[in-house]
Image (cartoon, rainbow, N blue to C red; front, side, top):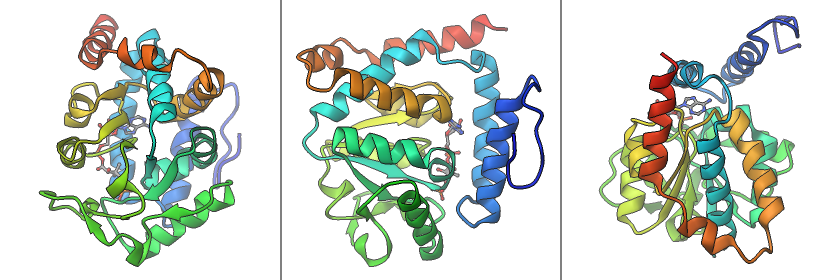
Length: 249
Ligand code: PTJ
C-alpha cells in the first residue's frame, strides 16, 4: 500500500492500522489534521487494539440504529473535524446523500485556513454545500466555551440530529442540552461523549463509516426505522463494549 511517503507491505499484519496512520500524517502535512489530532488517534488505536480491531456485534447494532435515526430525522447534520475529513471524506459525502443530511465543518482547533482546506477535501470526494466555514458559522451553542461553539445557523444550530464522530465531551453535552439527538463514533466507551450521546458506535471510524452508509442504503424506505431506534439502548451497548474490552485482557 502506498501513502504519501512510505510503502507498507500489504501482507504486513498491521497493514491497515499503519496505512490509517499514514493517511493522518499525510493529512497533517497538508494542514487538515492538527498535531493534537494525531495524539487523539493514538488513544483511539489503543482501544481498537483491545476490541480486536473489528466491528463487534454491539457496534453493528449501534451502526444500524444510527442509520435509522439519520433517516428518520428532518434536519440531520454530519459534523466534520480534521481527522474525519482525512480518514473518510468519501463516506461522509455518501452518507450525506443517502440520508439527505447536511455536512458542516466544526473544529476544536479552529482556523479559517483549516476550515477551507477541509471543505475542499470533502468537495473533492463528492460533498456539496458544505456548511460552517468562515462567517457562515455565525450562531452560538449556549454554555460552550471552545471554538466548537460557533455553528452554522443553517446547519447544526437548527438540526434535530447531529452526527459528531470523534468529538469532545463538552460539545456533545451542550448539544444534548439544546434538545438535539446526538450520534457519535468513539472507540473509548468511557469518554464523556460516548456516555452523553444517544447513540454511540464504539468502533474505528474507518470501519464504521462505510458500514453506516451500507446500513442506511439497506433500510432506507423500510417500515422498521422507528422500531430499530426504539429498540436501541445506548447504556447497555456501552456496558457490552466495555465487557468486550475487559474480556480481551
Ligand atoms: O480537527 P479538530 O480541530 O476538530 O480536532 C479533532 C480532535 C479529534 C483532535 C479533537 O476533537 C479532540 O481532541 O478529540 P478528543 O477529545 O481527543 O476525542 C477524540 C475521541 O475519539 C477519543 O475518545 C478517541 O479515543 C476517539 N478516537 C480517536 N481516533 C478514533 C477514535 N474513535 C474512533 N475511530 C478513530 N479512528
